[in-house]
Image (cartoon, rainbow, N blue to C red; front, side, top):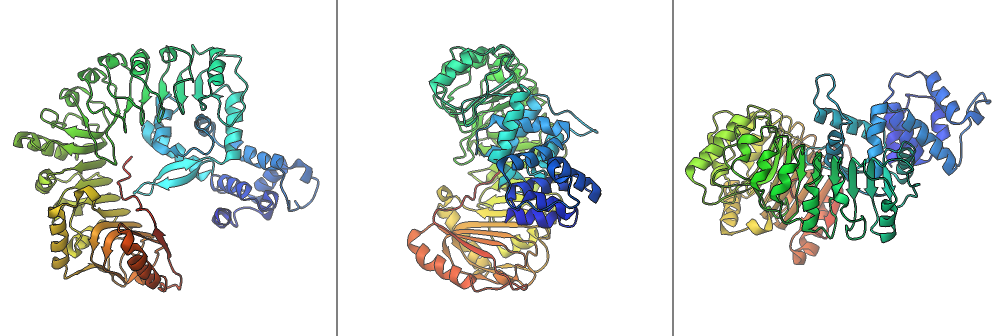
Length: 603
C-alpha cells in the first residue's frame, strides 16, 4: 500500500526507467520516491543518468530493462545512492539515528533536542534552532529515511522508525566516519582505534562492558544507554569530563550514586533520566551550569531543589507524569531567575510559584496540578501571568484544575493568548471561555470535563485552523458532579448533540469519551475534512448522519463496559457498516477490545 502511494505521489515526474530499476520492491520504490519529491523540476535526462549511475551495467542498453528480482546488494545500491543525494547537514542529522536500536520507536522531540544540544543545528536565515531542527526532521520524513508510526493530536509526527536496511546503511556510515560507536545491539561494529566521541550502548551483556574498558572514552561527548546500567559500564563512567548529552531514558537499575556522579559532568547540556528510578535531585546539580534540557518525566522526582535556580541556561524543564497527572513542584525563585526557559511542563503551582510573567520566552506551559488551597492572590498572579505570556511567545497551554475554579476564572482574561497552537483546559465547565473563538491559529484543543453541547460545538466550529478536538472524561473524574453535568448537558441539548453545517474547515480528528454519550447527529455538510472519529463510552445512544462526513476514513468504537460491548457496540458497528458516503465508499469501522488512549499527546 505504501509503495503504491509513493508511486502515485510522484507518477509522471520521471521516466519509466526509474520504476524499472526498483523491481517492484516497496523499499526501493519508497526511497526513490523520496528522492524525487526532494528534487522537483529535474529533467528526464537527469533521472536516466541516475539510473545508469546506480546500475552502470544497464548503461550499454538503449532502454533500461525492468529488473524482475533485486538482489540485496542492488537494493543497497539504490538506498545508498538516494542517501548520498541528501544535503550534507541532513546526512549529519541522520547519522544520529544509529544511536537507537533496530526497530526502536524514536521520539521526534527527543531526536531534535539532541541535535540542538550537540550543536549540529545552527540558526539559519533568521530562524531559530528549534525551527531548523523541525525542518530537517521533516526532510528526513519526505526522503523516506524515517517512517512515521505515531502522530500527535496536531497532526505532527510524534514517533518514527527506520527501516532495517536503511538503518544498517546509516550505522555503517556512522562507523566509517567515527561519528558514533555502537556497543551491542544488532550490529557488529569494529571497536574504534581512535577516540570515541559518541557512544551508544544497546546491550546489557557484561562482555560488552569489557569492550568499553578497552576504548579511549576520555573524549566522549554523547552517551546513550538502553536497558540496564548494572553491567554495562566500568565504575565511575559518568565522570567523563566533556559529555554534553547524557540520555538514560528507560534505563533500569539506576541508583542515587549515579546522579551524584552525573552532577560532576560540568559541560552537560542535555540530561534525560526519563522513566528511570530517579527519586531525588541533589543540590550538587548546581554544577551543571551549561544544562539546557532536564527531562525527569515519569520518575519519582516530585520537587526540584532550590539549586536548580542557578542553572540560568535551562531552556526545557520536563517533569511530572502525563497519565497519572503527578506533578513537579518548583522552587519559588525559579520563575524570576530562569529567563531562558521555553518549556515548563508537568508542574504543580503552589504558593510562591504562581508568578510566571518574567518567563517571556516561554513557549509551552503545562500545569498538571494546582494546589487546592491556593490563596486568591496567587490565583490572580497566575491568571495575569498567563494573560501577559499570551502576548509574548506562548504557543501551548495545558491546565489541569481539579477544583475547576481557576479554569472558569480564565473567562475573565481581558486579551486572549492569540498565538496558542495547542490548548488543554481540564475543569468542570459548562460554558467555554469567550476568547476561545478568537484563537485564529489554534490547531489542537482538548477539553476534559467540559460540557459536550450543541452550542459549544457551534462556537468551536468557527476555529478555522483547528485540526483536532477532544472532549473526554477520565475514569477517576467521574464523580457525582461530573455525572450531573453530563445529565444536564443531555437535557440542555434535548437528548441529541447536533453538529451543524458549516465551520470546522480544517478538523481532521474528533475524539469523544465519556460514561454516557447522547445521540450524536451530523448534518449534511458537517465537518467536511474529518478523517478520523474516535468514540469511547460506557453507554452510547447512537450515531446519525455519519454518511455525511464526506472524508471520514476511520471510525473507532470502544466500550468501557465489556458486558455491553458485544451487544451495543457490535450492533452500532453493524448499522454503521452499511452506510455509504456520497462518493459510494465506506469508512473503516474499528472495534477496540481495550480502550484507546484519549490522553493529550502534548509531548
